[in-house]
Each structure stands twice: as structure tokens, then as C-alpha cells.
Length: 413
Image 1: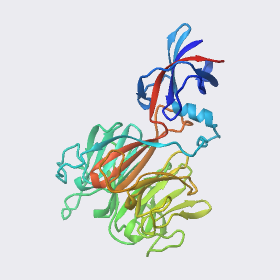
Image 2 (image 1 turned 135 degrees about the vertical axis):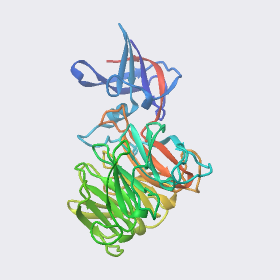
Image 3 (image 1 turned 180 degrees about the horizontal axis):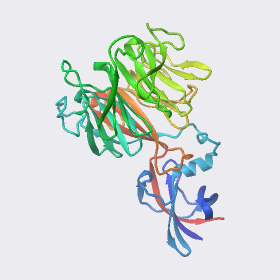
Image 4 (image 1 turned 60 degrees about the vertical axis):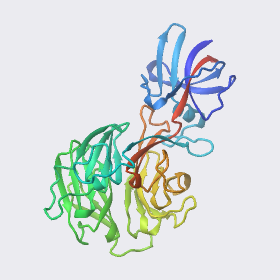
């Protein structure tokens, strides 16, 4: 008999006699599946994302015959569900559930817009991007990009070094994206340009200008950067997507000049994302659909409505490492998740506008990232959604966020 502590999902039935399979790392870093049986339960609760395992998913302490195993529920779920090479774990009953984690901002407080607003305030936040340790938010009405630490702690305002024409006074970022070097790209609809800053806020360059010629903009909103450093911009009122080099040289254009409903044409596209394979995703807001460009051409899903898989002015879009697509369905006051082919997976939010925790008030931007300390193959995703109408950022977790930290006596091989 081996005394142990195992993290088990709250969605499981926690009773004695239950057998489960865990992943155990032995000599030379090899992962082995091991079956254990619960014979005694403790009570203390914990959040697995705040643990600091010595190895991915598992931490060990103790000596002699008494060991302590802390096993991430995501690893256990992935083991039980089976793993395909490079694919998302096949979990029974569909994708893991999404749960609310935390929020930050200053919802309901009087706004003192423009530079000089308190650092904990967000004035109609729109876009969001993350590299894991940091979250960058386009703080639209406060005319700045806000940089936060994981967990929502304020770090820095990025805005003061961006040059602006004297007739405008200040720029107003609508969306943000990051490149592999940590540089911050921000769309600026008021000035019809793209601004680039370093991770510490140093101004690097800008490009664009008002117009419909290649490289010009008419209300640029969504922005994304691919693995090679190419920049994609949703040029809303020109009804097109433009692709640039990291220096701002025009490379390619899709759509335009007028609005259209055919594949590869757009009606006020607002959001844009790129996956690890280079596929392009567009929130085609005016057409209430999502379009995806692959090497085989365009495909689309969605139409106007409130049913699952339908949209009402979708604005933000993001893709996780498994190819799952997350959409801020702004007009329906909800978020939706789809498979890479457009198959509806799940939704959360919806209903009337609300400032409650886990509820939405005009969700606009969305960003996703694999959540440490899990292995790349374990299905754990952190989701950030900006809430323009309630001046806040909300963090969600796809998987099992809260786990029970159980004192367990384990028997078996």
C-alpha cells in the first residue's frame, strides 16, 4: 500500500473504490501509465494551475515508502481519453468545460478617459493578446495599451512614446498582437495605421494612412502575427484583409473593394487570427460568419441568429494549439468554440448584458494560450475575453480549473 496525494477533477465522482489511471515519470524521464484505486479521501481544495510541479504535470516529495504524487487532472483526462500524435485529446462527451477564473479592470467606476486614467482602470477594452506571463489589452477609451502580469496585476501603460498628429492629439488602439520577439503590434483606427512597440513600450515604427490603395486603411481593427512574422490586418471599411511584412511592406490582399457575400469576400471584417499551420481565420462581422483560408481555398460557417453556431456581429477570434476556434460573439453577448472545420463545440455566456462574474457585457476581443504547468499534449487552455461594456478583462479555463486535493491511499501495480 502506497500513501499518496492525487489531484482529481471535481467533475469525477469521488468515492472510495474508484480506479483511475495516472501518468508516472520514472527513470530517464519516461512516462508510464499506472492504475491506482482510491481507498481514502481527504478534504482540502486547491487550484492546479497555481501549483509548481517539478516535472510537467507531476511533482514528487517525500522519502522512503511514503511519496506524494500531485497529478494534473489534465494529464489524467488525456491519459484516460487517449492521445493522437499532435492532436487534441479525445475526451468523451465533447470538449472540456469552460469555467470562470478571475477578472480585473474597474467595472462600474466613473471613467476618466484619455492618458492619465488610473492604472487599474479600463475604458472600453477591445483587443487582447498574451504570451503567457503577460497580457496586453487595447484600452480603447483610455488611449493606451495596458500590460498586465498573469493573474491581472498591472505592470505598465504603453502609449506615451507613440507619435501622433497634432490635430488628433492621441491614438486609440483597437487590437493588439505579439510577434515571437515580444514586440507589440496595435491597430489604430482613428489614425488608420499600425503602430509597433517593443515589449517595454519603446516606439519602433508605424505604417498605413487613410485610403483604399494597397497598404492604406479605412478603420483597421483586428490584427494578428504569424510564426514567420507576417502581419494580418482586418481593414474594416475597405472590406478586406491585408497582409504585411513585419516592416510594413504590403504582401497580399483578400476581399474588397466593396462588401460581398461570396467566399473570400467580406462585409466589415473585424477580427483576424492565424494558426500554427498558417491558416487564416476572419470574423466576417457584417456577414455574421467565420471564414477560413487554407491551402485549398476558403470555407465559411455561421449565419445571423442566436442558435449555437450562429452569430450577431462577431468581432474577436483566436485559435488554440489544437486548431479550436474561439469567437467573441459580441451581439449575442457570448463566446463560442468551434473545431477547425467549423463544427460547433460549446458556448458560454449569452443572455442579458451583465457585469456578473463569468457573464458578458459586449465581449469584443479574445486570446487563448496553453496553460502552464501542463505538458503540451495535455488539454488545458486559458482564455481571455475583453468586456467593452463593463470595462474589464475576464479569464476563463477550458478543462478542469478547480480540483480536489485528496489524501488518498493507493493500491495497485
